[in-house]
Image 1 (cartoon, rainbow, N blue to C red):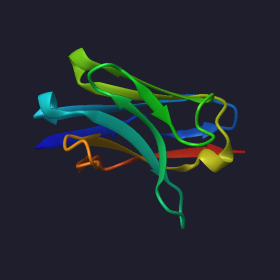
Image 2 (spheres, helix red, strand yellow; image 1 turned 180 degrees about the vertical axis):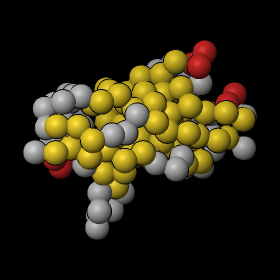
Image 3 (cartoon, one colour; image 1 turned 90 degrees about the vertical axis):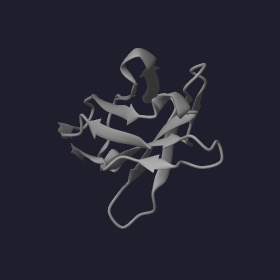
Image 4 (cartoon, helix red, strand yellow; image 1 turned 135 degrees about the horizontal axis):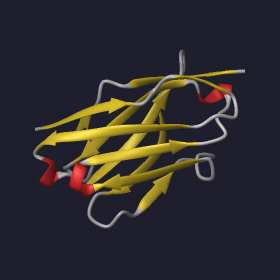
Length: 118
């Protein structure tokens, strides 16, 4: 089992920055990939970015690369999402997820709310 706890979401003005954190606990040695997703009200959950736990290889969703940067600190079992030049359309609940099966995301955090005001 892997437990994930996100933090860092808050209300921010358009153009501002936020850094989200997700700390994993439990069987962290089994983690293959960690990712960030977001879900805006009334919309489907959308892939933001992911990072390979072993070598730091990153992947980004469409239109995410450039303003968003995913990184990790293996010693702290933590993955970060740095978000810059935030826009009102970035408003969503941001979820952290971990894959151990390598075929899907097996564990999810509870989510952290990001609200960008115009």
